[in-house]
Length: 429
Image (cartoon, rainbow, N blue to C red; front, side):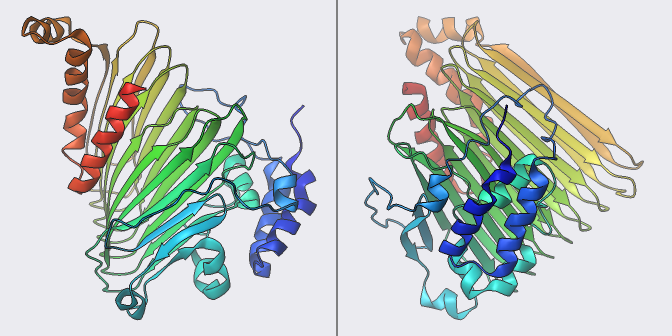
């Protein structure tokens, strides 16, 4: 029988005190624990994940704090702001005096709670993601053990990309529950890149629960890029959600390149008139892993636009499911919801699914979808091999071509190049 999460109350209180959290945060953790056991998992089409080990918490990691081992060295290569963490420790943090003078905040989540409590309390799991939405969000609120806060004031434009790197140490048994809170005020502009990376190898089964909240106020423009490279021993639920006000835009570009079982849950809530979300995702599943990419755009306001483009490749015995959900609510006249999901299978033992869903509750809108699951075209392979290419190299060229239609749409070219490099490593594994 699964352990009741409420039994961790004393340990959670001890962790909150250790981190010197404000009283409102400790109360939020307590409330989440009391709710969690009675909440259900969010329903994800075409997958059963109730048996996944998403709630394996080692109590000693909450009450007996030890220094992280094998902390990687880090050398800053970029000129822009950057924050690097391993587990709950900050390895490197950089924000220019010029941006700080403009009111930009970019720091780890625990420091933000202490220095900017009113701002964090206003936005942390109150608007985009709610504490008691489901069991995953409640568990996250209770056991969160790392993350960051990025705040961009009104009319501030940051030209250089803002970067965040979260290292997971596979040798430790700590749960990996990270929270990223991004708030872009009116008429601000940012480009943000985050990476979740496992270092080391281990057979220890660890639970991951990542929530990223992106709040785009009126006229804000956000380019959000993420590259997920979590290890085989980490079973993880990753929820990224954007909440967009009038004429705001978020351009998402995410590479789902993990080795373990992962649910990547991407939501964009188009709350304001004229808001616009573009979601581009690429995924590769290999070995015996199962990855699910569940992408939803909800048009709540008039003349809002939500587009989904996702392509994935499956090798070996792995599974990959793409759910694309476009939902136009009543009253959202003039809205547009489009989606394309395609899966390429490289093995007859692979399991793939592309599942388009359109929910239309209003007239005078546009909507459409395309979905496919298939194998490598033998004629393409024959043509390439007849030109002297070995089968492995020919197959790799086909994969690159298949994914390129998404990669070339990524707005930040540096991210496109990095993602291509990650794809090459994933295919070599």
